[in-house]
Image 1 (spheres, rainbow, N blue to C red):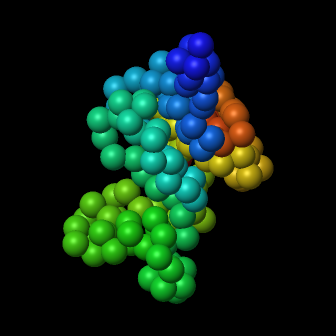
Image 2 (cartoon, one colour):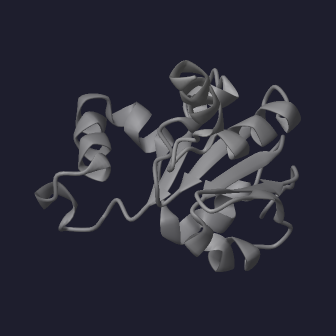
Length: 146
């Protein structure tokens, strides 16, 4: 009897901070050549669950003078970019230029915490395609920007 309860509890349990839903939505809709932008957060499990083959872009405030003084994911990426500056420039993008990341060929996918929804909703052409309590997935179709 206890084994059955343990199996039922194990099946019903979900990781409280999982982004699997957004990752599965992304994996089923993403095409070759699309890019993924994480907005002011790093969603650790998303690349795994979505089976991403390319590095994601991460939009945040990389010029914050306090960044090197805090021990968190931003500092880790900031420090790593010093070892490969060209890759750092490619993947670490300024949050202030989020709208420019939607420009270019192919679809751009934005992954953000629900608190970032107003910022993404304000960008031209973005459409929310998935949302839960941990993360949201927004789609920007290919477009050219001058």
